[in-house]
Image 1 (cartoon, rainbow, N blue to C red):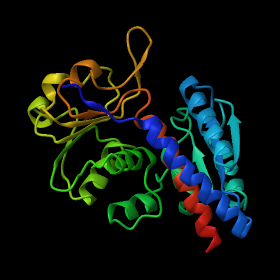
Image 2: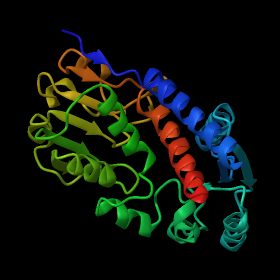
Image 3: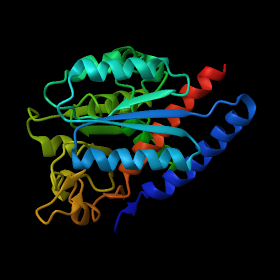
Length: 284
């Protein structure tokens, strides 16, 4: 039996309508328009696509948005000065610096320069600490999007075996924390994990965030598992695809996210949620 497709576009559209309504109510009540500033350094084609999508999502939701484009040879002090300007701008409630950054810029220094109350990516060490103890201001956008999909689809996490492939600070680690906080039993796998298929076959919920096309094959998936594909890759033909061999795994899993049209659209939706939360906090 083919797996149910978890339609990220449909879920995202519904959540964005709620965000749009909350934003309009906030503006009517307080005059505050949620504002997001995105800084992009260099001309990475994938990053430019992401930034355009974020700007359009903001405009559709009734947010104020600004994109600041800096050349690829920008010095770190110039980028930090721009962040300092945005920190003081009352129209801006969220600041996002598009990653990756050119090699001459210290990524961690840039993340630390964004004030925690405007860190809508939830990468600042202070926000990471709050997430870890379950007392968060914001949640990281991609893991939060996954949790929202599971919630809306009525897929329980509590008491279930959850396996996350990947241990990045952006997805893997926070994904494991959120699943744990939802009372899942969580295993994190990575490049040093031995007998990986044996581990992944235990999963009731399998999340792949490794960035390798077709990495997760059908023999790695337990019959009836829920498979969440966070990967955004290009295959040999240049077609956008995830980490999961979608056709084969769909015959084994009970539910699966597609690429595109799955987790990716939810990531931007949760960015809007975080920006709105930051604006709402200013109204208190």
